[in-house]
Length: 357
Image 1: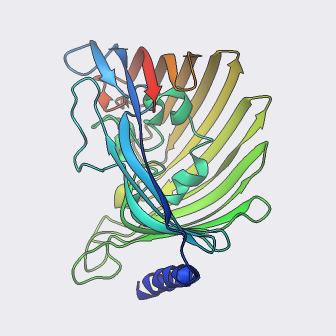
Image 2: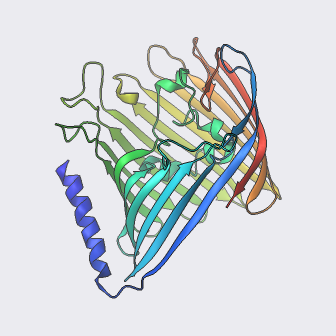
Image 3: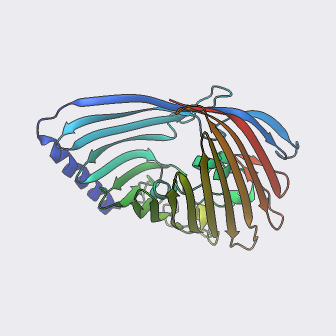
């Protein structure tokens, strides 16, 4: 574990060395956010049957934050980002407060970027534009490792593509003809063990005007100080995917394979994502299909269909209508956006408004 830390410190020191030239001291801080709420109908919300509710973050998670930069001269900048989740329907904020992002770092035109704090993993950085949640609503994140219904079949897995990481040090290289390298480590902070709970991620990405593609590997060690206890093992995930853009349209495909999900030995699954997004003037239509192949003895394969339509009122404001259907095999329970069904199927429909500032 000492080697990744030493490399990160050396990288920061190298970037800081570029700032020895006279600094221009130009800085800026921006307040930004997303406010999203709408009416949601769930046909089966558990033992109580269906439910109709006003819910925050149907299309995009409501949030507000601060991001800032300071020009240190010589192509070097200092960066920070603090971002908190928000429930528009109740006014409640997230706990911990800046639960979505809280990091500080340095950016160099020549050597890339280094961040330290709480942030999304590399596997999310590379695949988020190819996955469904940013375009088809948060119900579409159920199989991709976020907004899972507790006690549902998919809750036994978490492919970590949208699970934020604490105590992380992340590096992103400069773009070389569209290619970038990515690396991240996160300290487990378990007394008596330098490896327990540690996270390691590596990846590569390519971005051009029409193509985005990448691959990534992500692993998390068991949190047991003496090594993985009986029935546990290292959580590992490999992903590959990308998207093709033409005339404003987007087609995205992502495949992820996870072994020992949540550090449970033999808790394996594969996930396939297919996204299609078509703008038609002020209207943008989207459709997606997801399939989780449960490789455990339960064999509770899960499929999900997501549909979305947004109407663009301005650059900052949109109306939306969303629909998601999830179906689970072999007696499993469906669950999307933190709501678990009492049966093997669930439907959710939402209509609302989102404003970005």
